[in-house]
Amino acid sequence: DAGVIQSPRHEVTEMGQEVTLRCKPISGHDYLFWYRQTMMRGLELLIYFNNNVPIDDSGMPEDRFSAKMPNASFSTLKIQPSEPRDSAVYFCASSFTGYTEAFFGQGTRLTVV
Amino acid sequence: DAKTTQPPSMDCAEGRAANLPCNHSTISGNEYVYWYRQIHSQGPQYIIHGLKNNETNEMASLIITEDRKSSTLILPHATLRDTAVYYCIVRVASGQNFVFGPGTRLSVLP
Image 1: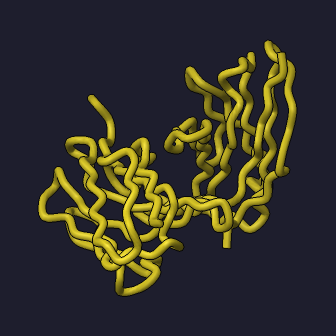
Image 2: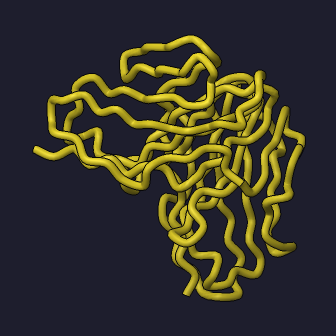
């Protein structure tokens, strides 16, 4: 298995632009998590899905952030409009059930200038 | 509001055992202890988890005290590639998210 696949690995964009981050979870996994990591705040959960349904989005910082999971093999995290303070590494993770470990992708390093 | 306490940093000599402690004094009966690590610029990597019995896999051993208020992750023969930030996480096995604290930065020295 190729593991959790995220794209792009690096993204540099200008303030005000729309950014879309993509994630392909491990096949057969029912849970998908989006995390953000910064030096100041560490790793923090943004949102997670179960069977493609958003369960907890309380970590989404504001309305500029949105996440979708149209099917079991694909999820997106969109920021519109982007701001410099959104610069961070964004991780996607998936797990087989709510009782098992989660596997993380390699992350997308986002820089908003 | 991480439920665990870990030392911010530790050193270990290459080839020796690395023992990473974690306090989770408020752990509930249905909460598991998970360990992850993050090597620089990579995604967090699952290591091991347990409920109350000691666990061992090809990467590490997990020792949980009888009262479950603390645990120790043991890397039996640390290598330079084990240099990473190690996270101890307490999680209910019901689909909740993994809450990461600041972790322990382990430096394996040659």
